[in-house]
Length: 367
Image: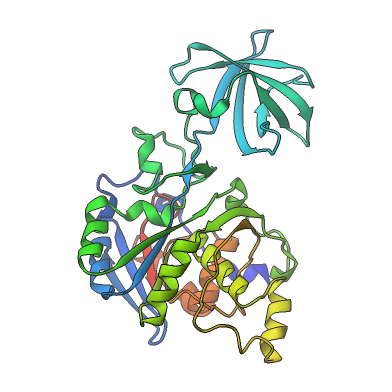
């Protein structure tokens, strides 16, 4: 399968640069896979597509205010983008600035540019601008007062309110980018879904910066997806399984939730490895007897599940997602769920109808 098969032409003016004033006021494109029909709605109309007993599952990871600023002893300014916390309490980060060798210290500023007591020390020089950093005080105690929310590279405007790049249900800090399908949900809309009898559950997947990277391999199968920490608790898995067995549909909010739930489904079936390995076992009939009373299994572990056309979905019945970048693994996941030709036709329609694209853009519901 060629990576070039997942391309489309997007006018740059359709890339949304800021969120709408009201979270749930975006447009909603509804794709019916069985009938291959496309319907245009507003996001609040999503209520009409839910039934009592359905389970809506969302990723509750919160974006780290990971962009921080400081100064070297020589006076030069330094920009730091935190990537991930390491087991030893140090952080891996992208650090802008010359001659930041091991042992270099960086005096950090607060959100308003004032000097703080917090100092970062380079403990290891990694590839390119990447460094391992330690801090003289617990960094988590400082992040809210010194950190700026990093926005995707295709967004060139600043936010008036950083909370607009967080979901209303975000809890544990850990993501470098927001699980953006969830940005459309307001508190009122979630309450309306609950009143209709929809069950709301959360999973956690901490989104990495690699989510914005295009697939560069010529063949899709040659691409290695980034690994991200994910968790599906035993309590949530139990409620999801009970709802599925009672006839409820499992509806994922975003590709990160989809990957987490499908990882749980593969674990329930005792499957691991590449899509090719799993598909071969499916074809042989080896996986036909997995526990039907346990659609998903709880887990807390990194997942590198790469979903592209040919993948057999085991848990998720419907997907809410945004419009994704060409050649991205996210677009490939959506193509696997909706059928590539149908999905590309939907994207062409979205361009023609002037939908807003990417993180702050409009939404798609795939049934």
